[in-house]
Length: 424
Image (cartoon, rainbow, N blue to C red; front, side, top):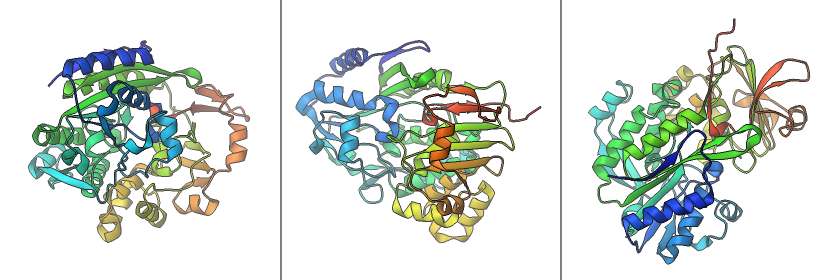
């Protein structure tokens, strides 16, 4: 197990040429490959620069790139326009769609006693390590997973083997991974590299993936004032240490500690990335540890038009709404449809403010009735977009038109914000 390339610091600014040099070095070290599968994220991770890495791999490996499978997880397939935006110049015929309900294979079971140990008894079942069949049956001599390490609500720090076991995973694996983590507690995992779910995925990789030619490229990205993205690190390897080094840097540059809790946070969801609350609720996840008790969160979501990326999950969100965790756990006990879709149940827990702060959702495609039916406060997107004009706001603290103070988050997917919630 090897870290082939590691470069990064809190003030680094890696360029596309740095990426090219790094890939050239690594590909030379691992030797020629004849049949390669690339596994990048989809447009929900647009700032990750995984798109550029994919383009470079296609350029440098040429005809050896046989397949490209975006790690969709439960997300909908990428459109041709999205493929062109994220992977410019890469032929569409190379892309494969991951179907999480159908096209997966269970490659092993993480034992129940181990799962129970790492979750402190919260989840006591064995966990199925599932991947898309293409990873097992495609005859590839390199499976190259590309993505960004950033604070995450389910696993603590996103990417690495999550890109494989969740991004190309199946129904039971995804459902149970999300639910056990939600039951364990989102605040207990976010921003941490060592979490119960990460230990479970590491176990699966160590025990069931020995014959899979896995390699990971992990970026660390920071958004600086004005929305400019800086690539602070790139780490390429096939071992846990590669991820841990990336996670350490991500914690340093993506975890924002505020000296006081804002009573009002305004978060913006870029239309190129967010069209559902399933994705857009990162605005809630990533800011919840900062918002003052009794405060409010205003989410500007001009392209959000649905709740779930998956039709079945969308129906469940509409049926049950975003509720405090204790209520969701009771609903799971009483309702078979929710018990059969535990990732949806986990999402309902994650999307709730636990009645601690108000969530005002201003979308471009959901009605007042729809927003209020799931437990949020409706906001008018036109009115609020004029009041909180994103091109006039500074990242961080701002003054509202009434003189009150609010904190602006330009892209909640790129960080995690925390403050002491108690207000003097």
